[in-house]
Image 1 (cartoon, rainbow over the protein chains, first blue to last red):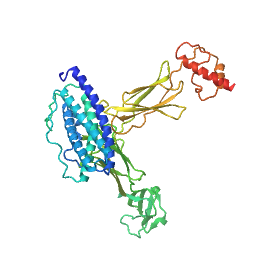
Image 2: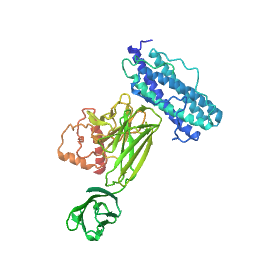
Image 3: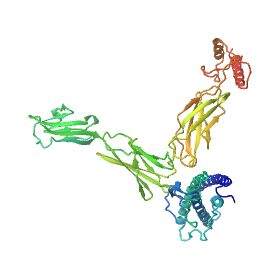
Length: 195
Length: 335
């Protein structure tokens, strides 16, 4: 593997970032469409405020511009891994709840889940390039939602999709920062590997 | 002693002459001019249904001694109506500003108080020195899904009014229009115009937060615009301009991912390159040619046209040929 600061690594990083940006762009577009469909099919109010839900990675960041490249990648990876599990859970619930009644929504959810998985993998590739290697995944999945009422689950789903849409924009910005040629983007100390 | 008194338009105002008794003999003046006794009730001055023209200095003098007993400055105005408030981020991701105005004037001094709440946090919006009715605020967080709630309260001596706007971080992002738009003809290319511009100077980091652009152009003589959306770069070559026609061109900008389009830039004008006629003919011949045909294909009189007798010597003159053929065709129609 090329040393992280070598010219070929820089080219690879730029290439992976460009592709990642395109992936994130498409993902965001699909999440926005999914959000619209979800709000309508689940009979929700689009402007409803959803309180921060446990287990949903929040896209909001303070001092975002001061983050190092590695910090960005690690935070993004942790988020998309969490979304992968949350979306899988939503898909499961949706199938149970509606059966075949709303196949279109189920397909849209599955398509977004696929893109989230692909993006998480893409982030792992970028981390490998940083010679860090991706952290191992946590054994536990998202907190089980079985204690929530149907309505609460729908609101939770709304919260998940909203944060995911926000993350897709943030990831685009993160990757652009990463693609910038800058020395020592991975040399600064990083936060603990396991979230 | 002197003070200020605020009254609503249409109100009835009674002014007392300080501590003078009701039946004391007094003279009232308004801005130095004596007020007729018909407006007095004893020593009280009665102004019914006041209007804006009655604002001014009112003084009361003791009858015989002409000692000044009381003075007040009457300001007639209205309580504030609901203000108009808008917030916008033209310098994302640094922060945003909010600006406001009153739909109708109150004619008396007003104070404005603004509060910005993000979730549970109250943020401080720093008032700008200029323009006055504006304040700016720095983002403490980016990519938040929590809405911002901004409340503006206007207060004056006659009342108060307030308004609230709520918005997402992304929704208010609107850059300023692109700057330094320049359009130039391209030598030896009669259908091209080269347009270039710069990112608005208020946009702090175009490298990390790139803008995309929307170009619109039309010949002055037509109403319909052509549009081109450009996802990167700050220049574009128009390749389908009508030869010899003056064009008007504008550019708008938008963050690549979020927010709305800027207003259109200042308009620039440009005309594509046209070749000088190879054989100079007399003025009369050119005038005759231009008046013989009167279709909409004719360029405006000030623009040079190719003389029909021009020798075919270079590729660019092919246009002259075409123009010549068109002229000839119309000439035939009208002779």
